[in-house]
Image 1 (tube, rainbow, N blue to C red):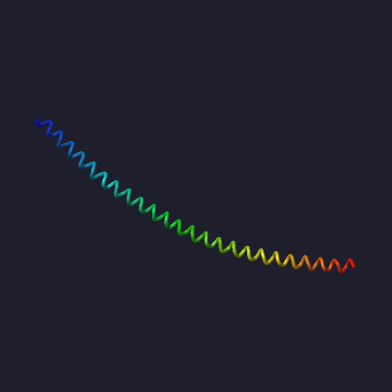
Image 2: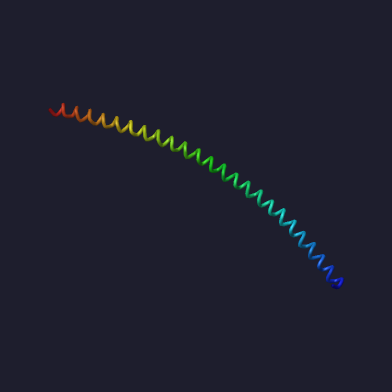
Length: 89
């Protein structure tokens, strides 16, 4: 092997080593970013679960309130009907 070829080989080894080190740092950085994003997704999911649960509770309360109002309307309709019968008699 000629001296020029050996120097070129050493240069290629150094460049390859530098690239491997750079890629290791970039890989670590990407892993850190992924972990951070995963944590944000998990926190967002927990937050959404809480919001969904709260909305389901509100929905149930509104349904119960609607049922009470409907029951009261039926009672009032029957009373008006009864009164109307008394007036028409």
